[in-house]
Length: 124
Image (cartoon, rainbow, N blue to C red; front, side, top):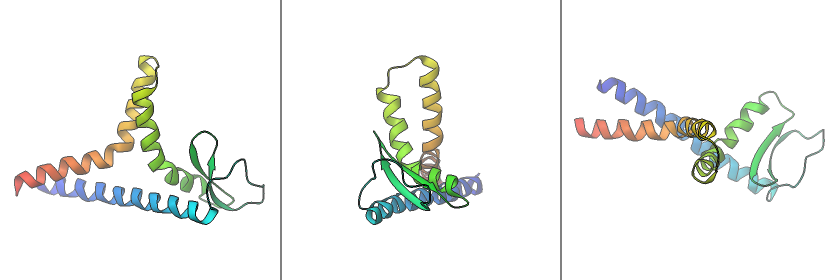
């Protein structure tokens, strides 16, 4: 049981480090672009940029893994956005349930890390 807890803690720690790297990259994109852009970039643009329509999002295009990188950059923002939607959005039960499931999945590395850390602290 302890080996499984150590493995889950290490995997969730790796995911949290990945999330931290995404946050630092988000800050770097803001620093390089000098704030969010308004509107779309030109068609020949290659790279990632922050865009602010109503909420800040990151967009990437012009290279092979642009969609994957875009989702990775937006992961920390989605943690906040889905959590706020769950609390403040007035909707039916099914929509609330879907939002709760997505929020739980997004926060799962942090939740698993905390639970495994608690159990490992109790055992030692």
